[in-house]
Amino acid sequence: MRRVVPVIREAAAEDLLLLPALEAASDTLLAGMPGVGDSGVDSLPLPPPASAAELGSALHLLVAGTPPVGFARLEEVDGQAHLEQLSVHPDAAGAGVGRALVEAALAWARTQGYTSMTLCTFAGVPFNAPFYRSCGFTEVLSPRGELGELREHEKQLGLDALGERVAMRVELSPSN
Image (cartoon, rainbow, N blue to C red; front, side, top):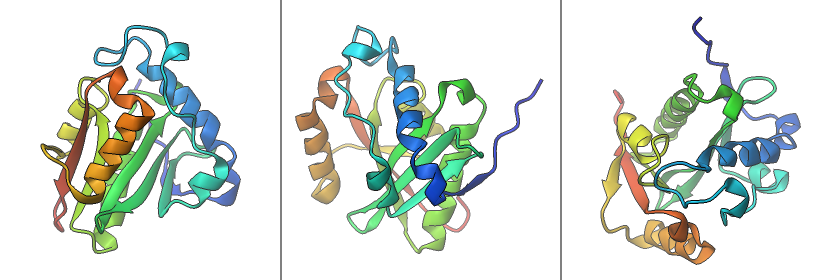
């Protein structure tokens, strides 16, 4: 039986309180993944989930479903759209929710006049860099400016100790 991808929409105020728990649940998908540490998720030094207030202050926030089973948090880095967070609940993983959120984020960025979108992610996790490559993103070999600063901040948070991290970018045109 084919699963139906939930409707992607702008986050409403009532969604914000649900999203930190959704992010925490999504982080559990990293446990045991190739390219991320050797131990269980409880020992992964991941930053805590964003608070409802932090999520509410995002440049743009998209959610999948009611109640949400996934979300995409968008910010601006170096004057371009930046996919700061993509989280999908484990119960909805593999059903196309992440891809639908990325496509909606790209469409939103185009309508706002951005010419590219960046993100930072784990290089070896199948639903991270390889997934984003399938969405048209390519690796930024030597990130500079705010994107480079963001990568340095991730290192300071300890994310690089978990596994190789990369910055990625996709150029936006009216057709992609």
